[in-house]
Amino acid sequence: MAVNGADRPAAGEYLQVQTTTDSRVEAMELARAAVAARLAACSQVAGPVASTYWWNDEIERAEEWFVFFKLPADRYEELAAFLVEKHSYDEPEIVATPFVAGSASFLSWISEETRRREVPAAPAPRAPAP
Image 1 (tube, rainbow, N blue to C red):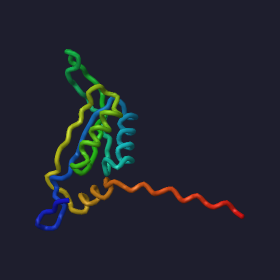
Image 2 (image 1 turned 180 degrees about the horizontal axis):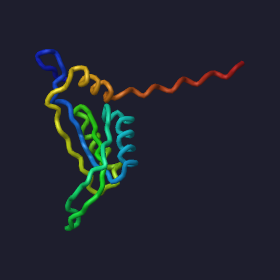
Image 3 (image 1 turned 90 degrees about the vertical axis):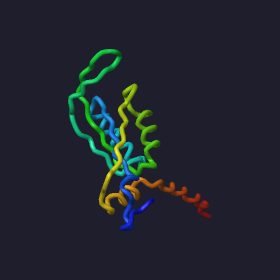
Image 4 (image 1 turned 120 degrees about the horizontal axis):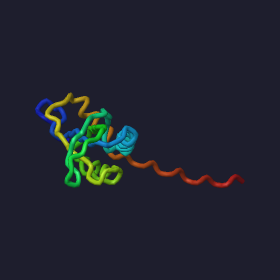
């Protein structure tokens, strides 16, 4: 992780990624699953919001929920692939915005909570009792 002159994590190495869904249930599940997989340190669901957009040459309107994810920039591709796989939309919104600034402790927390964990080895089988 790069640091700035004050020995702080570099803010530009972190992202907030957003997507939208058409149900609160799906938004909550995407948020939970991404955090559980450590693709994001945290996620938030907000909504509903009123969306207007083009789809199949027609203007559509829908009620949607935002899902926001906070993560190191180097985890973006994994999160994007996860969202494409799990999302119900044919063409989900996946937009990333870099952090311009952030507290050193918060940025460090994001890094720590999204680092890959070693899967604990299974315990050795026990010898049968004599």
